Image (cartoon, rainbow, N blue to C red; front, side):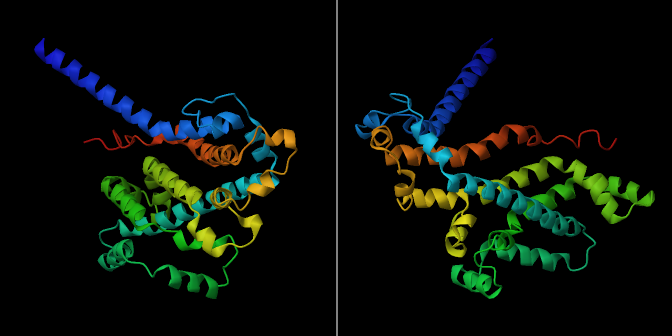
Length: 290
């Protein structure tokens, strides 16, 4: 009885801590969402906290009616999809051979991979390289430099190493090639880690804007984050506020900025529920009978 009471108290305390932590994490997002849905008066007077005051969707109307925003959204989706696909192809292509303990030069390759986790050429050499490769102001300047993340590569190698070798040995006995074994056995069993790493790659690319700030000059190649950065820096606020005097009374720059933040954040948040079921690994259970 005493043990049950202690467990109940512990569970209650855990629930309270997690609830408070969740509210703390959600508070900034709710505040931005409330500002984006409030009228000018409450925003300017500082009355908006976590809930909208004097509900108004004019800011979203302006954001969705801005052709450059919609174009940036489409380009960001294309960029993120292309980047994630190529990153996973390259990571798998390098990770699978490096998971083989009998691969010649394996330790040397791993040392090179680990070194890149701690040292890089620096921003200026990277810019010079991109310029000399004639990749400036192109989508490939945002894709090629980050095709393989060393940390994600090590995670994938570790996962491959945890797959029982008896599965591959059985495939080899049946005459399967390494490529067929990778496609037919290793990748299906690695679906949780592949999905997780794909999401990490996608989120990193979706939220990235430093490289676009350095390499991209054409407005049609502006991703959402660079567009949002310029908006917050007030470089584009004049374009979004081309409206009548009556509309100006209901929309302020703070509301437009908040609506743009929500506009750029919600799409990537929608992806999480669809991929959440892959995060919990367990497909290996029962794969090999002991």
